[in-house]
Image (cartoon, rainbow, N blue to C red; front, top):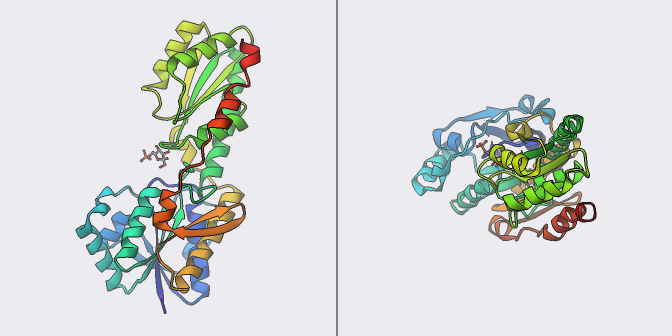
Length: 324
Ligand code: F6P
């Protein structure tokens, strides 16, 4: 019977990571387990930054942004010798199980640790919504709300000055933040990975809207264009629409998690402990609606992402009639 359980958050932080940690600690403590925080993710596991915590650590953090456990990107964890040292650190403290909260890179680390004898359960902690085994990742809802609020604010000033604004949002390999944010924020044009609009397409669409609408909001995923500031200059020159660019950046990753992110994260934390107590390992948790589901981590990583092409096409064609 497992008596000690470790928890770490890894990769880019996301709102709700603390809520998940809180769920794990509170439920584990209620089951009589000892709980340990590994500071700064896999980097701390390697460096033995492991601290015993009681439920006081979990008190109040459910509503806090960031991650109280700290996080880091540590690609070196792919190396076997690095993982061996990390496992020794856990074994020295007799910690046999680990809850890992992070994105796909963190999942791979959890899978490898499971193969090496540590019972790992992975939770989807990333604002990007790029883990297909979960309908929504922990942090996505909060980041989305920040994006929508930002679009609303930018449109206010854009309308006052009759401008076009290009807003760049996060989502390295997944356009959900841009697509959902653009739709919910009432953007005019959205460009996401997969089949992004070319710079020429954007210029053409904005040019057609000039004279028909007072302001234009274009939402784009990060890394699609060399620089959205340069793109704004090109759009202005070609369309005659005064154009600005705003990069939302890390503002999207901070602040209090929404109620749904907290709820999902906390209940996934409870489920993770339940599975560990059942002797399960190498599983990734996700949600289908309000239900928490689990898959072997390797399977979870291979689930193809749902195509958003139809929705994206429908949305970008909404303006066709007015801009023909
Ligand atoms: O992984 C989530 C994410 O927020 C991506 O959307 C973004 O590209 C990246 O992290 C930024 O990472 P960093 O904070 O390390 O610059």
